[in-house]
Figure 1 (cartoon, rainbow, N blue to C red):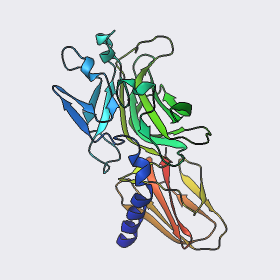
Figure 2: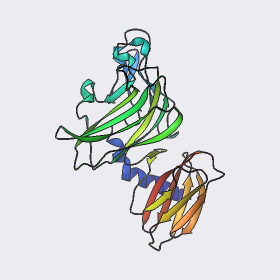
Figure 3: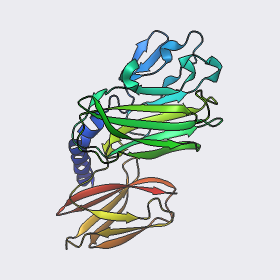
Length: 290
């Protein structure tokens, strides 16, 4: 089992590291000292607009996720007491000051989903929003949006679908804790944590869940008690391993053909990683128990 697990991790890293690496400082591990504060490398924020005190809108946090993926996340907070200064706005975007309107980082391939983890502690009617815009030759050709006003006080994954497009060569990302439909300013001192952004796969304990030639369906997901797995009828035996997010193998099933049911009644609510391997390939999916 140990050799299988090491092979599984190495395969995922080699296949999908480039998807993670395209986004600048995607895990918010890198920070630049700027006198009394730190800025997230590769991202703009309004920390340098703070004229007094230490009410910086963006800070490095040791509260990060997944537990074994890096050491930090970014903590974004509104400070309404500093209005009308930019320092009141919990907002960041890739690049420099002009990165809210122009392409910032190059992309490869054809990403269709932006993944990441977040916690959100809203006040008033503030909404957490994350935007991505794609460009080709400097022209905006589309993008996507994820938003929620609901309180999420423990780390949860989000997925942001990028609608159909032909080709793109660059992108930018904007993240806000302060969006307000009714006014231009934040309505409260909402707090947002963000960590481990990635394209087309979710970072799980230093690796990414992976697409491959081995296709299978999972339903329902999220779930409460049981998960049904349905595989293509290719005649091969499959091995199923359920991991927690610390990389511990919790359940192993051998010789699975076309369908299987996982009994998760005695498992704690949270996220799990399901790995399936056969002679035809391998695949991994994230399971969420409510």
